Length: 387
Image (tube, rainbow, N blue to C red; front, side, top):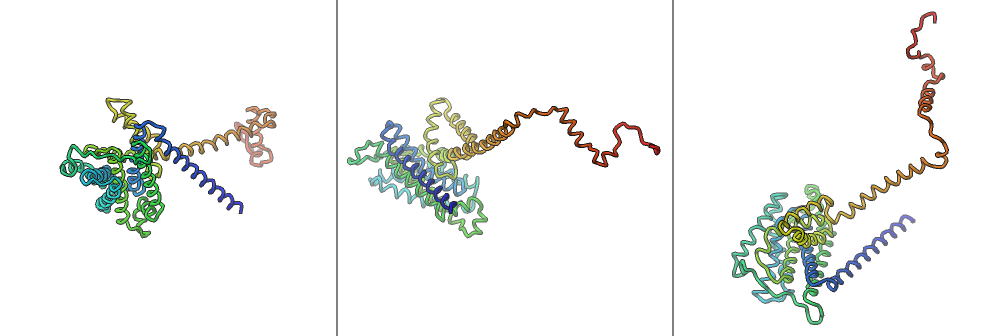
């Protein structure tokens, strides 16, 4: 009964800590746009925007175990879907979000087919090819996409009743979508689909034996991942108000994958940390070295990977584990020292080394041992019959 009570108390305390942490996070997130300058609010908005894209990539790479270097192409597809609807058809901003999500979901289903037969580097090359040829294709479709000049659309404006500035309103809209995306990703991972993805990632053969349909879940992983990227691209159009093919080169796909790895693969909080890394580290690199910001950016990635091999999300657990391993060793050493130096032991002088040697030899060569009593001393003359 006491064990059950203790378990219930521990579970209740864990839930209380989670609730307090969530309330604190909500309070900080809601108060941020009123505290920071407009440009800093814009940076926070971009962090939340990239969080949505990385949450989808985390479903595919972190939990699905598949490598994708073409995530920037799905991001571009969502951005251009919203831009074309706003520019050519003059639809409302909110109407572009479900269209971009559904279109990228279907596009992900189509690109999930190669995942059925390819894996590893071969799958990465196929997805990278999509990210490479999409920008030139967008330039060729000038009547629709605007070609190299891109498309300029109106940003999402705040309603009159809100009383918020444009940057603040855009921040809250993106914050709402990001929170919904993270919640959806969390529920997906806790559902049957998420458990199947984890089984496929760990061992495909074992998952197939357990009844997991590999083809369906691999394709769905690409579809969900592309849908999240399309939503992020749509938000990008709302925030920036301009899209062009050069904004979505294959470098964007590599940057997103690097941000996810730095943030932490297979972690629910990894996308948020990776998005902050993607947003702030390039600007820091530019401030440190205007001549070679890419070199500084690469060195920072190497440093983070050396300090936190499992990503920034796993760094607190790594530090706490190291501290926990060190504390018992320190406690054991201090306890042993305290036992050896008790007042009773300190009053007894340490025996002399020669005395210890003599005591040890006399204890070994006792007359009670017949074999030792009959043994001849070393260097003694040989015995005769008379002796």
